[in-house]
Image 1 (cartoon, rainbow, N blue to C red):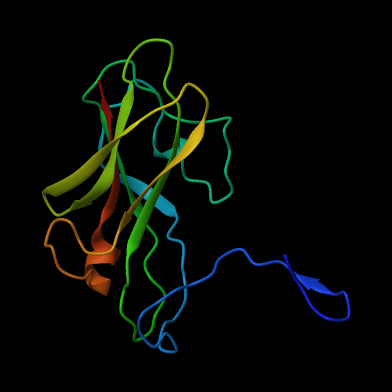
Image 2 (cartoon, helix red, strand yellow):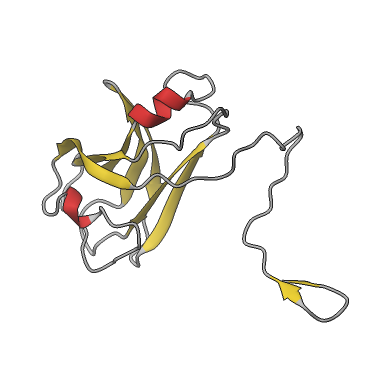
Length: 157
């Protein structure tokens, strides 16, 4: 919390630190799940269980074995002339008493997939992956690439 001389305060949720002029940055945007992707092999649950913008732990999809995949389409970027500085994929997950202990989090672009495994805890938690460049092309994300990508998860032993 920042506090000013007269006792008034202001809360800060994020601070941007950059090594370049940030005045041309449009800002941060969230892309919400809006449609089923091309793969859902999880044991139970469908895209409809993760399509909410407001977090809801009451409905989710589950996997009892490794190698099950789920992906979904996302809303498009807002209109404008800007450069994508990075993409963050966030997934809320937990491991069960048995079954997969890791979750591969990533993106699918066309037929190419790139995921990074993260070890799950037994309680629901947020797992994030930040990508400053497109891991499939090794170049800065283009707006068209972001609009076309699928958020992609896989259950991992």
